[in-house]
Amino acid sequence: MQTKRWRIAAVIWPLLMLVSMLLVTAGGLATGGKAAHGAEGSELGPAVYVVPVKQTVESGLKSFLERAYKEAAEAKAERVILVINTFGGEVTSAEEIGELIRKSSVPTTAYVEGKAVSAGTYIALNAQNIVMEPGSTIGAAAVVNGSGELIDNPKVVSFWVKTMREAAELNGRDPDIAAAMVDPGATLPLPDLKQVKQSGQILTLTADEALKVGYAEYKAESVDDAIKWLGLENRERIELNPSIAEKLASWLVNPIVMTVLFILGIAGIAIELFVPGFGVPGIVGILSFGLYFFGHYIAGFAGMESVVLFIVGIALLLIEVFVPSWGILGILGSASLIAGVLTAASNPMTAFISLVIALVAAAVILYFVVRKYKDRGIWNKFILREKLTTEQGYLSAETKEDLLGQEGIAITPLRPAGTIQIGDNRIDVVTSGEFIASGKTVKVIKTEGTWVVVREVL
Image (tube, rainbow, N blue to C red; front, top):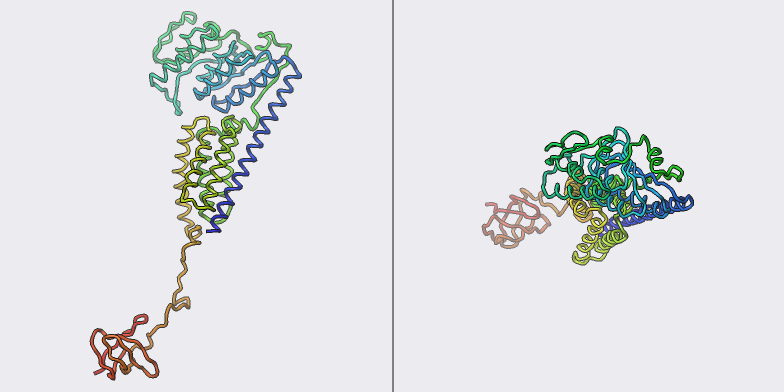
């Protein structure tokens, strides 16, 4: 049992240390990056911040844009130009980014470079100006599921139509056009384009069409051209790109990646506890949980309360190993650990589903690993599996096989048990059930272990 406890401690403590180191590193990267850019912006004075939106719209992008807008505000920048080229992404993240743009003290110009599709369209509509690159498009903002299939739930469509209409109205754009970009069932005359958006279609506008219907104010060949159109060509231009940590975090907070990290983390640590030898499974498990918290911390979701809950949960499980509490500490530790994981996620329900899937998958993996290495499991420390056989030279008791067929004299009545004498040896025997008087001659007819069976010689 002591060995088992130390094995568990050997897995838990490195996990705590790694999570702590990753979070300290993440904090240093985030703080250092912000300080450097903030100082740079302050020294340069009025500036134009050029910020790329060239990835899937998700929580990691929102975290990066929060940093960008904060630095732009601290530097008292005159304009933020979002260079948009995205096929969209999460509606929730798009809403949060839209709110960020609306509440910023620094005005925003959206420069559509390529495509502003779906959630990208919503982000652009929240900007004070929309400038489009020749050949670019905006629209196709229908709500789709993870497989790219249209969601025809009336409540969902109605909500997103209303949201898009409100974003369009912010800066005097036609809300009906925004609705036509979302609702495939809508029919909308477009006299400026000399066409009608028919039912079953989702509206998408080219740069020239967007200019005609008032969904773009200018068509620019480049960001520099857009800056010149804004009259800010003499301002300092600051290119702000996601840091390596933010790029990594954007990948780590993906639900699929998150589920894989959970599977590797749970299975790795469990295998390390059940199969001797602290090696690859334990390291992989520790790194997986460390990367999970690292990514969500950088993305701005995992606060210190999540980290504290996770560490407290691990600590309680460790205490349960050394100080048995009839499962109370184990239950509290498990609850705290799960709470830490869920509160660190951008969407706790998504994280919970990922955690359940990971537990099932990890249990399957553990079953096959333990089955394959069953002779190496820690339970072998508590189960006696050695057999002391006669072939190996062990004797559990003295055998009586050499007496078989020998004759002796009954020195006591056999009723049916008694004692006989063969040569100089007194031997306890039994009969097959019959009575044999003392002094009679008997013969050994059977030996079985320590049992000796005799019968009278007539």
